[in-house]
Image (cartoon, rainbow, N blue to C red):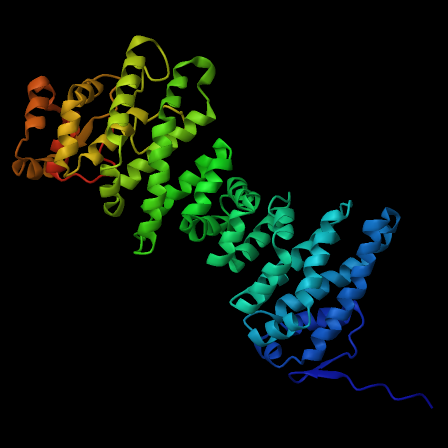
Length: 479
């Protein structure tokens, strides 16, 4: 008489094959774990069985890494590995009990080791890519909202897994590994990241290649930008294209609908110091653009983006005061405006004709909006700051600005102000010494009709601008 078959295992009232030995059994488990009630009642022994299958199948991958002739035997093992990861991934969804059980079995270390082996396999199989993706999804789910699991994932995955995955050609692998990094990072681990800057720079590159992916974006805005030390170290090591990407995200953070918090303000003051000091050191690099062979110079483009960041920082009340007294900044900006203006007048170059320049425009052409942003920064630095207003006057900045704002094709600084907006401010305006000088120098530039819109064109020097109450952002714009 044949021995009786062992009774099937139960999971929350659902009949299941036992022991779990084959692909169909794993698929059944994966399907069952889609429901919360099944996840919450799963016995720990099931995860031990899944781990046993994962270890056994991993042995085939190890053999294939050592002996390429064994690759042809990978197909069935990769199917089992994929389904193991799917099963474990589903089991961890919003279930800390399962996360803890699976972690305590040592499954995270096995998963990370296996994923690292995937990078060593020199084969192009869809089944390998699928197993790779599912393994990363499992690590992301077991770390989600579970600090103990995050610590174990970080211990096993940092830095090798991130170095292997963040620059992978597969977009999903980059996204999933970014999710794991975002979930695992905290203030202490950020310090470790400072010692492995290649990972941080890989995140910047990932955002460059996949700007629509939320995880690299969130890593940069929610973690990197909260660490002035990391940003400073990264900036020194990055390429100019990567610097532009980082500066763009810094701008996005400053101008977002959510204002900087009390915790953000001191951090961004540190960023302001880095941006201002770097601009002071490098701003004259922009003059290389006057030469035809340098019209697409990436270093100059990065310097222009520094100016954009300074404009947005000085439009933020939490950062304005610090930059208004930053040593040498106002003087250097006026000096650079003078050099750019002279260069544009002396010869035909990229600064000579800037028709329809917009101060708010993206710098697709490296010179677009540069003069207008210089003037905008001068205006912001003079906002309610008599010392800086007087300094502009002493440095002959007012004639320079008015000359830069002549009503011609190279004008970067024309204001289109509807009467309803201009007149109330004008009625409250009391001219200062600087503003009286500006109007005495160019009385014909006070206002000119601007066509059918009914508006007027007004050219304002910084003291007027502050007294009229214009905001720091978007003040200077051409027609």
